[in-house]
Every structure is written in structure tokens, then in C-alpha cells.
Length: 113
Image 1 (cartoon, rainbow, N blue to C red):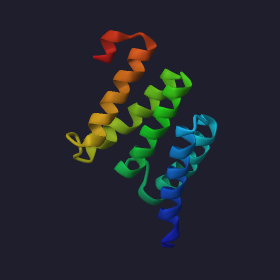
Image 2 (image 1 turned 120 degrees about the horizontal axis):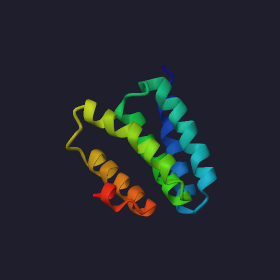
Image 3 (image 1 turned 90 degrees about the vertical axis):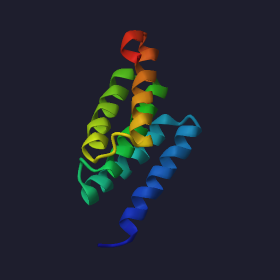
Image 4 (image 1 turned 180 degrees about the vertical axis):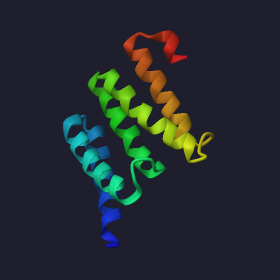
């Protein structure tokens, strides 16, 4: 395997993070999607490395106010973390937190708990 390919996924993810912090959400999504395509090919759709990108994309959708889409992406990563024996990992805790934020912003406070 070409060793530059995993690095490209990492770089695309970092570029996505920069755009997200600059509040350029559409650009962030573009680079997160590029990273996601590579990670799916390298690791498969159910690998925790792929799930990290689902979480990043979900956060962008929260920032864009699309809470349903955000929850869709968080819903993709949570079972992956659980299945990968990462149920008690910081990534899983962050995903639960993000789900709570999305529900809170939707005004669904009972689901946010």
C-alpha cells in the first residue's frame, strides 16, 4: 500500500478541522468527505478510524443547524465504537456528548439527557 494514502486522509481531516474553525462549514465538509472516502477504502466503513470522521461531520452539521443530519452521523459512529470494544473510550464519551448537544439544540431536552 502506498504510505501516502493514509497520510492524505489525515491531512484532509486536518484541513477540514481548519475550515470548520474558520466557520467555513461547506469547505470543512468537502475535506472531511475526502478523508472519509479514503478511510472507508483503507479500513472499511465500520472501523473506529472511519468513525472519527463521522463524528467530525456530525459536528459540522450541528454548527450548520442541521441537527437531524448531525444525529445521523453520530448514529453511524456510536455503534462502531461500541463494537470495537471502545465503549469506555474518550471517543465514545465525546459522541454521547455530541448527541446530547444536538438534541438540546433541537429543543428535545429529554432526549439530550
